[in-house]
Image 1 (spheres, helix red, strand yellow):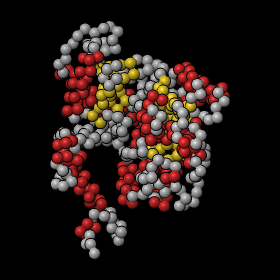
Image 2 (tube, one colour; image 1 turned 180 degrees about the vertical axis):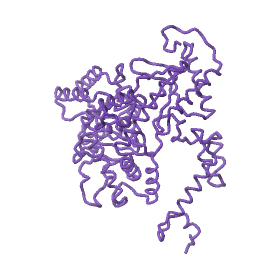
Image 3 (cartoon, one colour; image 1 turned 135 degrees about the horizontal axis):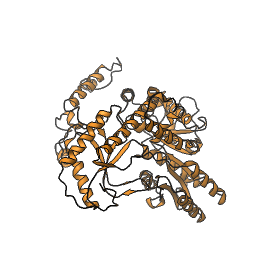
Image 4 (cartoon, one colour; image 1 turned 45 degrees about the vertical axis):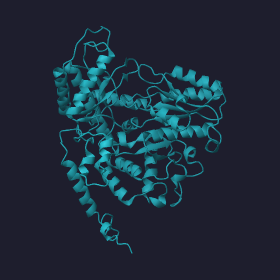
Length: 518
């Protein structure tokens, strides 16, 4: 008999069910990571190498330091990290993720996941109530990310508009309508589903960055008049940077009018891409006049206006919810939620006896880690509506404070100062009129920030507010840490000013009408 006693200690002992060894391993690994961590930096220091050179070291065959693998990792909990809509995850979610991983449940079937499968349906019920859907008729599933929620939406639309789609596939030209402000994954999903990128038509937006309803109606009417199929209409329920939200009620009205006009036997599926904006729904019972959380007047106005734009969310056929964004959970935890569960469950149901809950029969994945559902469940239990109100109120206050401090410095231009989102898009005041020179300056500016590793922010290739386009690179600070304060904002702005004042740049005369005019 093979002697494996010398490797048994690497596994969870069924005779004791003790996690003492696991805790020791976690502490040991974490202490090593801390040994290379500077708590004043947003990222753990890294010695960059080419991947080929790294692979030559053959880590699997030779000894290595585990902490080396964490070089360059982002410290999302740090207030100096303002890169994107990636939150510091709740400790309770991390803990449940760890314990859940210990038992290694597969949410493809409740037999393999026990009552952890319950957390998926419990979360579906909770969010259904939040969007004012009948939870007995709604359904959904946790998927592999925000792109997954959009993939499931378009897939559902394909099933609705093409008879026997699951067996016959795409039998004719089928289109998806999105907007130029919506996430680019809408186009990518069309590619993966075999529709083709060209069949994802991106509608122009208005000055407020929402869908041009006139162009939308003309485009949809034109497609239907030519007997083309339209599987899905993808709307923004909150853009990444500015939380711009499409008027879903008006889109639904146009869709329904054209359904009657062309006597369609199906409904083009309307998906509200709310992977970020969903969390603002927790303010729907908030007393804005009393404002017991003492959120600033500017922030409370923005939150109230955002909530008002989401009030018709119940009209959507489906929505997406990312708990690893504004749900403060670890990657990945995304929920695809649909008003009519029959469209996704087909001949199956969720109101069944134990052992009959079989999501693998209607989901894309057969291997479905239950961590995604249990983390969402715990996040909702931990924060509750009041917790979400507190953190969104705080982050909005800190974003507005940063906007004010950047503008007061008179060294920068904030391009999205009227945004309701949590990002601040800005540029140094320059005298250069050519985009190439502006891009070079921004590149140089950002490189210094990146190299010094005092702050971790983003640089974007261009920016549009709908009414104005800035066809050059811009800096972006995205506040997501609950540890952000007015002082951390002041320190950041002073740091940015210092870079600007010590950076040599050739100034040239600028056109009076140029947006970068000082």
